[in-house]
Image (tube, rainbow, N blue to C red; front, side, top):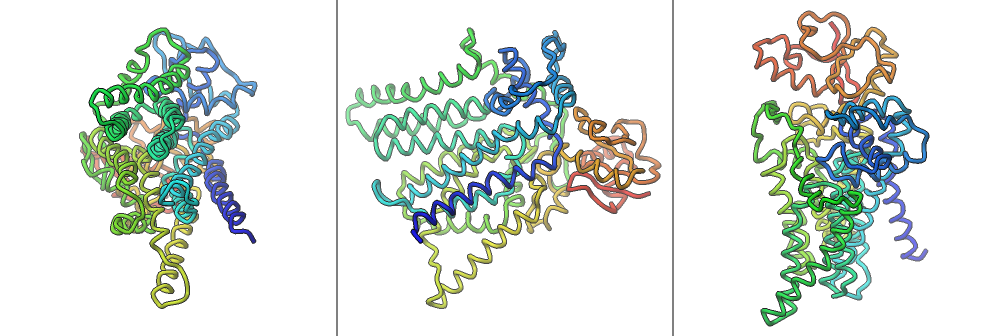
Length: 532
């Protein structure tokens, strides 16, 4: 059979896995908390032509996710006071919009564009790795490097987890990665069309999430390097720098301007940028390793990366760094990989809120790309003893990665590796979108249907347990429900973790259920079940 045909089939299979694993996984989940605002806000943009709700995030992801909803006959109140009133509430509007319609249908179609963006990113990871490790322009693509990088991406739980929800991190990762791919192509073959493509995708990245602005100094530095290398006279360098910058900036601005529906105020993007964290509660405390902190920890994202990345993938990343001298790429190629990745990671460590590894997702594709170069170092075969050992080791690691990814299905959000004992111990280390995001009401309803006396205590206030038929619902308030529990209780993990903090603040040991009681069961990794 033709080798190229086999390569195409293999590529197709891996890309289908990239799509279908999160597609089927997502069917298990009710809205994650951020979806309650993102999807309805996007729909309101289409219907009203105004970007009003959720200004702390640019509109692109919300517009993409809500586009399929335009072809449905939905309940939408354009005069809702939460949408047009003097005091707007994106959460109240979002909850009312979702749960007054068929929320499962809305989520099915709303999540599809994010999954397709993941497929797009996966393809470009394969494409860039195949081209970068082919050594020279005109050489056949290095498909081995491409397939290794794509394989690592396809079975990355952190990627799968955030592919199945309407959130902004995956889109930012996709468009920013492709931005640098085309900028790299421009360096390699000196064709301005690639600079134009880079500018377009830069606009899409900026239209996905405001943290894309972190990449602007890196893009500017690359343009400066190009201008300096390709001109000798100072005036020529400055002129070329200005021209190339405009060649990228103009299409980027046009994309953003169109995404915001061509506003009259040209300061629209800066105004949106100022609203980031506008709804953040200043007294909120971050959580790590069983401890709470107002300011967070400098190593939060590094630890989250180490314990939420599969060990085989960590081994591949470490090996690619240790054997950097053997990777057949030049210094400029390595700069294109590491400069965006390191700069973004450093800014995330310094500035991002310590609530989820998802803030690091835009750095992952670059590390995966670099690890693809190991394909040229690994010598697989059954000739010598060394090659046999290498082959067996690769097979074990590959099988381990696939098993780790499939075994956690569909709970990718709660994935933790064996360094901390797996996902069952995840709540001891991290919380929020690292484990539970309010997304498990569908499975909780199925559990309660079999255990009808179960009392449900759930802290994500903007969701709607009753919509899924959940009854016996107790609001997570200060009524004292925790002091003398009787019967069976299901309590969401995020609340249980936060009850530890409340126990300290109120000097009430009865609040700390994680320390006092051992659960008899769980629903996914979102609810612990207690019997009294």
